[in-house]
Structures are given as structure tokens and as C-alpha cells.
Image (tube, rainbow, N blue to C red; front, side, top):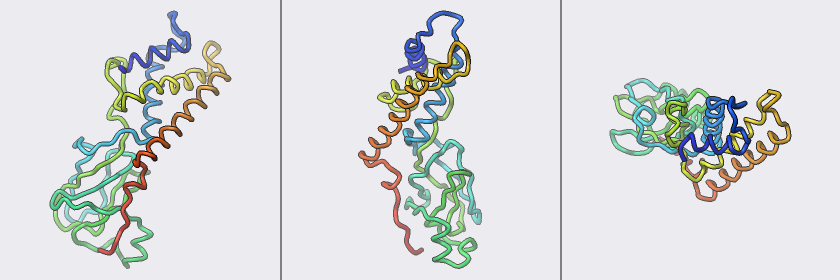
Length: 221
């Protein structure tokens, strides 16, 4: 579905057909973007291992920490271009137990740490040569959809497009205005929306795409 088709479907559901609209086009488009972003953040719907700005990181000798693109939600896989071997995700607590002063150790990186709050990836041990890091990630949409590009199709898979209508409705009926706020409808559509999120998570877990699927146990370097 095109973005405007999803917005039009939501407008039809709220019976908002006479101008001036209580919910302007720009507002419903904002709700659409918000719903898409929540879907991606909660359900990990956009996998990417190709977009250079997202997935390719220049590695510099003696530099351990790298700021990743803020649209990245989860790093699924990391490998160095020089040999193609995957790095193992690890955690500071584990390294503290295994290696005294691990922050100062150097060599070919074999593991990485990822801080999802700061979107920072740390290589371990410290690299001694320049390289390129190739990432496979789950991410947010590359761009929000605007009224100027409302004919674009959301990046998420087609079979999730119509459920976005419920996300828009949950937000629309919660708008604090005399002609828009409807507590009962806002509650109904919010519950439908949240149940949809949980169903998608269960669907992905059954399909083997949960985070644990990609977790590899670390070993000694």
C-alpha cells in the first residue's frame, strides 16, 4: 500500500470525510510514521546488511569505539572485510572476568560490544590495522514519510501495512480536542494495536528471527 492509501483508510474508519478535517493530512501522516517507527522498534521488521551509511563502518587502527547510525536498533552480525570472519558479541562483565585490563589489549578484533542506548559499538581487542566493518542490523526506516512523498510505500513488508490503520486510529482518537477525543475508541484501538504488536513478536519468534537466534556464545581469544 502507498502511504496515502493507508492514511485514507484510517480517515474512512474515523468517518472524517468533510473539510476542514478535524485530523489534517499532515497529522494523520505523523501518526502513520509514529506507528511505523513503533512497529520497527518493537518487532524488528527492517533487516539491513546493504545500506552503506548504516552497515559499513570504517575501522581505524587503535580506535576501539565507533558511533553507529542512530537508526540502528540491533546489531545481528558484524564481520571485518579483511578476512570475512564474524565477530562474536560479548559484554563488559564477561571480559572483566576473563581478561585483566582488557580495554588496553590489542590485536585482530574477534568480539564486539554494542550499547543500544548510545548506539556505540566497541571492538575487542583494539584493532592494530585499518579495516572496514560490515554489519547486519535491524533498523528504523531510513526516512519519515512526508506529504510531498505520500505515494511511497512504507519499508516494512506489505502484509503489515493494513495493521498500521489501527495504530493511526489509536493515536487519532486520543487527540485532546472536543471534536476528536473519544476515550472508549482510543482504548479499543490501542488494545488492538498492542495485541497486534504481541502477535507479530510471537510470529517472528516462531519463525526463528528472535534476538536469541543470532546470539553466538563467546570464547577465549
